[in-house]
Amino acid sequence: MAGVNSTDLTTSLDELTYANRDAAEVSKVRGSSELGKDEFLQLLVCQLSNQDPLNPQSDTEFISQLAQFSALEQMTNLNTAFSNSSAYSLVGKAVIVQKSDASGQSKEVRGTVDYVEIKNGEAYLSIDGNSYSIEDLVQVMDTAYAVKSNLPSVEAANLVYDKANPGETKIKIKLGSNGYEASSVAVAVNGGYIDSKYLKYEDGVLTIAPEAFKELAAGSYYLGFYFDDPYGTAITDKVTVKVTNSGINDPEPEEPTEPEEPTEPDDEKKPDENEGDA
Image (cartoon, rainbow, N blue to C red; front, side):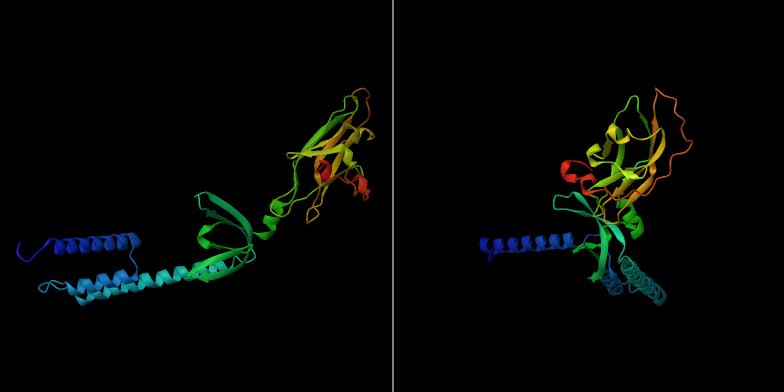
């Protein structure tokens, strides 16, 4: 072909390649399913510019489309305002958010919302100095409920201690979580604390040695559990121990003896976490 050399042809192909690449990048940035206010207006202008002169759309149809666009915009603004307003009410609330880390694993974060800020129209929750999108919020709890669910607890149980055949007493307890943990627990029965040397805590189970009950008369007693968590949790109505002696027919009360507030134990009688006791 006259007047055309390979250099001109190569340049044209390179330009075409760059043009296709730019178009592909634009397609990645905005998918075909995304239709915002700007796209709606562009479609409307395009429709006006390409009407059939012999069969144009009526003014009523255009007004209807504009009304739909206005309603869509107002609804979008209303949803955004409502979402942000709801976010402000979360300040001081205990929440759970789930955030994916770099490896794609979902990480659960619990805490109290310190404050809420709006960035680019989206609400963000500040929890322990970190910011999380409100889109990551999965649970909101009343503060009192959140505290209660994290405090130490004791599983209800009715135990039997036979003096003729004494054995270890095992009780399931939780020392708390999420900043409300206890480092130790004191156990009381019949108005006095059980010596810490008779207590052992491991994997959620508190074991009481048989010697702790050998001085008790036959009968039923409540055990009191006194934790050293920030709230000083005391549980006195979950566990009873029935003291019997299979070799002697001792009379027994029908109801467990009501727990009494024990006197403060000496330091050496408090369970020491460093010794492996609860």
